[in-house]
Image (cartoon, rainbow over all chains, first blue to last red; front, side, top):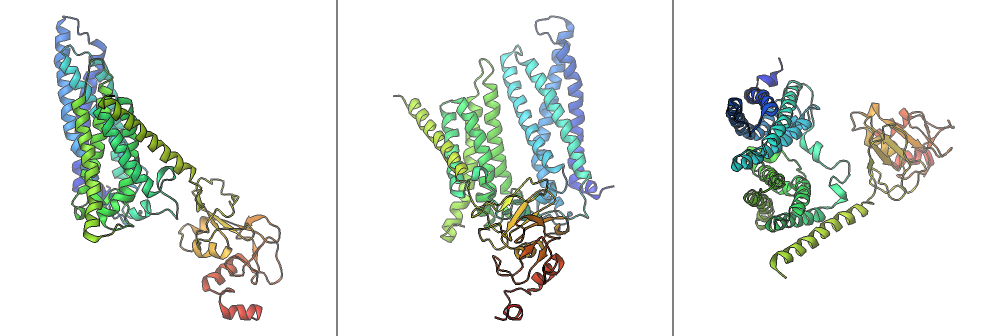
Length: 322
Length: 169
């Protein structure tokens, strides 16, 4: 058996994912029945029974999310710990690129979390209405969520069972370093333009949230997420590591850097997920999600403040920038 | 004009600024070429003269004459102004044996397989190593393996002793 599977963190992680998937499988089967027979206007005993089952399904999904949400950072922690076993890997970046399943898995995990947040948002407003006006919508969305979770589980198992501990992988400096002189930034940007876009898009996103300009919020927050990834890896990250050549999105989640990566990526993704879910919710008639949007704006503000603080701290300590 | 309207105008202007920065950056992207990806046919690519950097010596490539290209198995292509630069750069690549190597010959002016080309030892080349690539065998020419060995041993015209021996100066 692959020794990676026997590693404690991996075993705990995979077992947890498997249990969550099994619970969601039961919810999925019940959900299909609910979708085909649901009629809120009916006074049949069967409808009462279905409403009870719907409540059960909802509880299972919420519980599954409560388990899966911490499993995302735990997954990152697990692959980071595995870097000690995979030759050449210095952090999670090396482990995740050890085979072809790693990066798709990380992507699917983020999309799954986003779809869970969407489901929870719609569910929240559905319950508030009393007569479940969005029941079919959220049930259909759950089918998509379950499909994603199934794909994720398959990728999870494929990823961990295909990590070869005898084959060297690349460390983060090889993966994110300067590619033989090639500019790694998008749109041909240089660092100054990247930072200009970073702060401007932050202002546009927060400003558009303040005046409830949803279309602008959707565009600017998506662009902000994209630019932020590069800004953190290629600029702010170097101040976290205090080394201009160290460019990695994973190392900052290590103990040496006080696990600050979890705050950086957590606030960025949390803020973006919140914005997106609230915007989707507001497309439903009569729904306003101002509080979620404002909380998301707060998360993005924390993200920008933490990133900027590292640069400011370095400058105050050393009197120069990297 | 109410406050919301003012914020809306400010946001619009900022967003136009964002779009402008992106477009300006894209249009300024004409930076020297150092690498081209996706050359899955592994064929030699036309070099944008005066806009392409030699990956080894970092100089701009000013002429195709005696230039060289390395295409990795995954289609990435690097450019060199001198076959000697190509040899020096290639020695640290673990996929060197699987790489596709091209040189632009000085006798026929064509791209040929660098491993099948012949090399003069006293030619005027961009980095003054002296190895001019030829498609046809010539008197005193050496093959790729010999040229590579001499490059790695430093036995080129750059070395005064070798220069004295070969050119008498």
